[in-house]
Amino acid sequence: MMLPGQRAVYATVAKRLYFPMVDRSKGSPFPDRLAEGMRNQRLSPKELAALQLDRLRRILTHARETTPYYQRTLPEAVERIDALSDLRRAPFITKNDLFENRELMRSTRPKGQIFSGSTSGSTGIASKFYFDSEHSTWVEVIRWRGRSWWGLSRGDSQLVLWSRPVEGSQWVELTTWAKYRLRNCIQFDTFKDFDDAKLEKVYRAIIRERPRIIYSYGSSLGKLADYFDRKGYELRGAQRPKMVEFTADHMFESEQQIGARVFGTRVCPAYGSSEVGGVSQMCREGRLHISTDHVVVETVREDGELAAPGETAQLVLTTLNNFGAPLIRFKVGDLGAIFDEPCRCGLPFPTMKLVSGKAADLITTSEKEAVSAHLLDYINLHLMKHGIRGVKQFLVEQTAKDAFRLTMVKDQPFDERAPEIFAAKMREYLGERIAITTTYVGEIPLQTTGKRRYFKKVF
Ligand SMILES: [Zn+2]
Image 1 (cartoon, protein in one colour):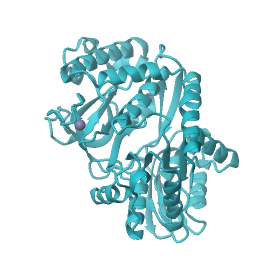
Image 2 (cartoon, helix red, strand yellow; image 1 turned 135 degrees about the vertical axis):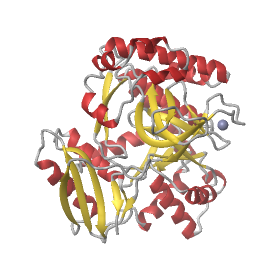
Image 3 (tube, protein in one colour; image 1 turned 135 degrees about the horizontal axis):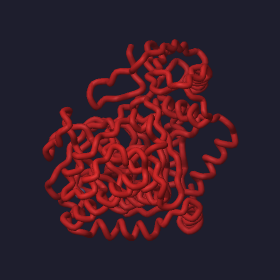
């Protein structure tokens, strides 16, 4: 059992020392922007819409003036827009456009430092992108503003079910652990066997440490909720976290309901993408509110026309605070709908629904159980990080318990080590017994609309 005094020390270290230090090193004006973000949520819907339009004009002008890419693609008139719907004049950006043009999208006038991020997202298409201090600050602001609706603030204790880099070195393991600890988090690696023994450890950690937030991939949280249910565990009184939040992949409605019962609080999705950061979060009424001071969300039909309120269509995202590399009309690959009626909670932010998010899965082989399929994304990131070019897009299909088909679209230049390392890392995490066949194709077709994924179980 952790003592209350000890708990307070961890929270103080995170709030007063660790986060301010990280803010300074990243050139992040977090306290100022948080105050601004909190003011924005007290605006009327009309005032907030005006603020969003101002920010949109500002970023469009900046994009045209400071990046070669947008100088070419954005019409001059796009800076003089009168309404959000005028954004239609700008062309879309696909994941492939981003992949091929990221250097041209980089601005000569970032706000603060510039950082590079990478993901292979839900589609298996590798993507690398840039963002600046201003953007990363707003990503943090939005995360914690949304959590403040649940009575939380940055530095509160968290239990995190997430992955660790697949580097495998003890140094990486140690620094990852230390970083989480300083942020007042306990983390469980979802790439290592996520079996009953591990789930029991998670349960005991919750009872012992009483985290205020449980944060997880949807798939791993679903697994934990199911375990609690099977064992008859239910959190009571002070054991209950203030918030249970999942992101990055889907959690079934039934799993969310079981979660709400066993954890004793509502299970909240947070929607976002690596390239954009947070997009929307759940309020106490159970609605997903869009952070319109950080992002413009459009819903676009197959023919390119804007969808009506409530109509399900492709989600298209525009970043408002990334002066390092603006992202204008990015087709993120998810489906959703936007609503125009106000929410009972009183927040001015419009609400949305995510129809079909990233469908990651859990992989079980004869040696390993319920390993998060995000592993495959991290293997691809590992290759990118070490400059091993070769994978433009991939799809892994599990054809039998211990058999996998790895389909790749080659990138130029193609490094022969890429498929070898990919397969070696898969064996490391999924068992030495697995057989992997690799094939190369010119293109991996999209799955059924909205259901884009890099892992499929086909047996
Ligand atoms: Zn609401």
